[in-house]
Image (cartoon, rainbow, N blue to C red; front, side, top):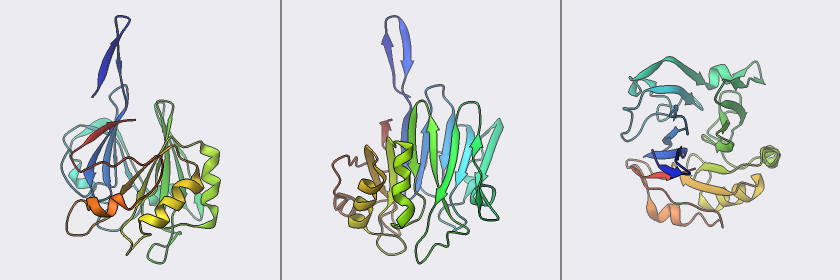
Length: 209
């Protein structure tokens, strides 16, 4: 975790560690740990306080990889987030997770979700597996700071459409992920994601949020 000394007070910054494919880990300023769609890469050693799963495809739901969990760890999957067509918000003392729509030809919106993660004063859109859909413009109401979009162009939208989504939802920064199969990441595909607030993150890299 990145910390700075400010007026004799140590200030720690929230950070995101990209594991590869659609998997990443968020660590809050207070050291709480969130895993999103565990499947790829390493970095599953920190004790989990929250595990999020956007849908039940095998490359998103390997929660057994997160064997180290805090005593009060919560697991929140699409099955808890979307019940009888209703989205259910998860509110904890330190984080709020708001499920939102996710859909395309390969992903049924009845069993898939994205999440807006509100933590440390930041709004992070975990899109899950989706393509552009008409209601996506409604995400502007969250005043997103970050968004992570799938960009593989086969099971989801490609990088060009994902860039359109970044504009549509009004996010400040956007990270292209989930862009290769059989490997963790395709840098060339990521570079085709053309958005002014683009941030490219390689597997194994950490960025401050």
